[in-house]
Image (cartoon, rainbow, N blue to C red; front, side, top):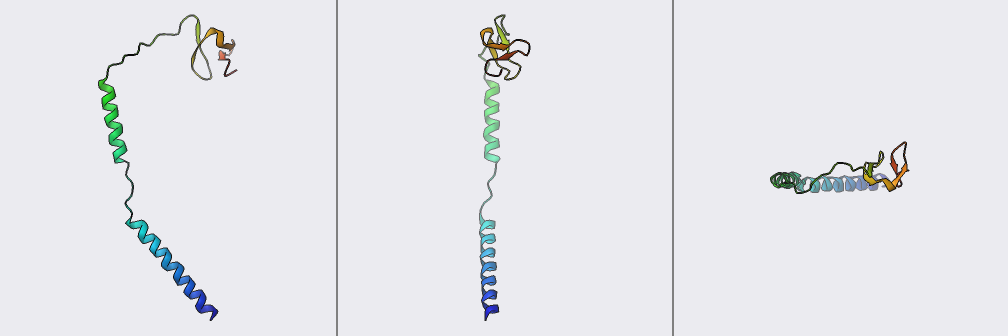
Length: 89
């Protein structure tokens, strides 16, 4: 009898596994096409828009931190030889 119970349990597990595989196969797979189209549309719109921000070079009272790469005022300079700001020093 023990062999029969084990066989029934194994058959039940296999049937459950087959049902799960069938359900998974029926589900539609998500596609990234919509995301790609949206991204392309955004890129096209961005290229048509003229830039309205004026970029200035680093001023005499500013420096670029060598670690965070942000432009900071000279008062934020903590390590002059390594050109690090207070946050990064």
